[in-house]
Image 1 (cartoon, helix red, strand yellow):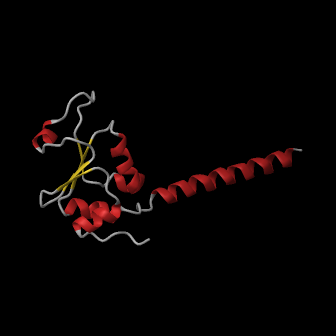
Image 2 (image 1 turned 180 degrees about the horizontal axis):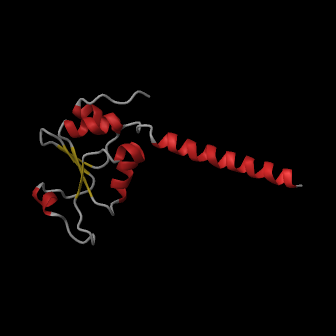
Image 3 (image 1 turned 60 degrees about the vertical axis):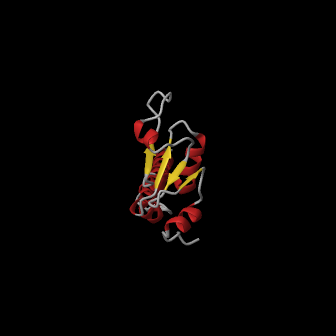
Length: 127
């Protein structure tokens, strides 16, 4: 009986260990859109949004959790969500998300990674 219990524990520990190893290995991989997000910043594109904006969240989700952290994002909302920060007032941001590019053109609303790639001449990720 004791041997069965020991074998069960060994199997459980191996499964948990494999799961932890897989999570750590996956977390070290770059995001699918890392290069595009970095290029957008280098090309002078900026994404203006608000933490409470569902469309801004959707915009970030198009890039995935990892790559979204690399986007050239500018937060426009005060912490209480009741006012706009001066940086966005100065840029005359009236809706979220708003993308402003190096040539000062702007697009209000979500943009796909492909649209952003075309607008900035950044190389899109391979499908």
